[in-house]
Length: 95
Length: 491
Image (cartoon, rainbow over all chains, first blue to last red; front, side, top):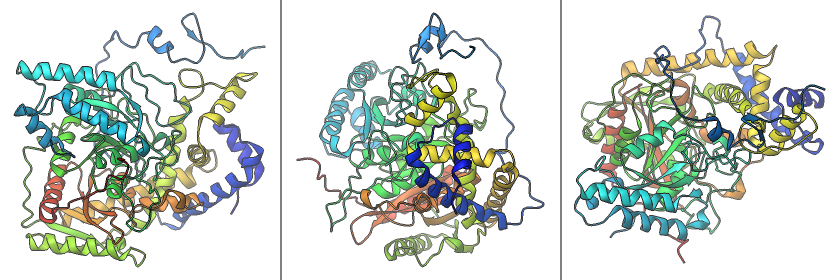
């Protein structure tokens, strides 16, 4: 089982990962092999089974909404690859 | 001072003034230096560690120690955010990231006075079973086969955490386990690895891989150390909405190694003709040992065992593809410049992620995409319910379950199969536990015919870590496993 080239490129677009031409073939084989493996589940009878998204038998714990003076913009922006003033900076979006 | 101290021994030496935190820290920094070839650490924090050790010694002098473990040097997987110390998840995309905050689990270590020696190498974003997916290169297993000089994998993803404890490059370490990432490397290195119940240890500040499966835990030399370090890092955290509200327990003080009357289940689905003879023998010997010590063996069935791995390889990549969407070259990490925003995202993620991470993001995106969501993602969540229910049923009859930790012992770094699915099979015995959210421990039991460690896995029901640690201690104390590791890297 192999992933066809167009589906793989579309998946790359959805995932925002550029797929290089020279990687297409090996990636298609790898993903095909993984898909074949996970397809085994299709034969399992699950008609009256509820899905489990979290194994903990406890509802999500809420906490009080208290403002804390930590993680200042200056500190956080230290990690930004590019910044301007007090903002993250990205390539121009609007023409 | 004897080499290869464990947490308890180190705490006794400190209490009796036979050593100081500064002396211990210097010894271990020196060990790290000598063991550079093993590639266990991504970042070594010598200066910070020595400073913290001085403070610890001062506290001890003033009888203000934070805990009996105050001043003991440990290592931390490079997946835990550590304030002002680089945290990379062993990925190129985060290779420059310096967190402005501390993860709760590592903060709990600081609160107990433990000293971090640095950040331990792991598979990229904890995705792997060999440590080969790390951007910073493979960790080398300190163990070698007696018949060959080839380097072996330490297992993964917490490969650095396990190898560092085995090689005495730290006294104990923190790892994380999403599908076996603590237990499998522990098994490959002759160390003790505990995956706690989901929710026991806060996930806050740990780089997320698969949020419904990720759980942090200790890798140590002994079961006692495991109990002690687990006690330190566990407890409710209001910053993690999936953190359990159960009270913190005194796992170390309450250790009791009796197994009299304990019922131990042996699941028939874990039996296989493919299991190496030595692993099968270790498993059989352990059954016999537990029986002789007063436990009762019961044959059980966990019918969906073989469905766990395909289920995991839907759920984990799905959650990963969502969690890793945040790495976009904007807020932190590296950026690859391009002419517009979308291309910048695509180029950054293309050069920033390694092959295995990309494969999992692509598969995750696929199973979550329109038209496939029900067939894959919801289907996997339903099978997850069946797996969980297998364990619920089993624990009506037994207290614990005994299995091998891994289908093989450590293998050669160069011998990893080309097909990713073959590598995934390494986690066949560990993955079901994460899907069920229950705790499990890998304990070193014996060495195989090539002198490589074999680990056995004990599993209990949710929040029954005390029982788990007690049985593990019984096994440990009866066999008295002596690693006898040749430190070939010290010239």
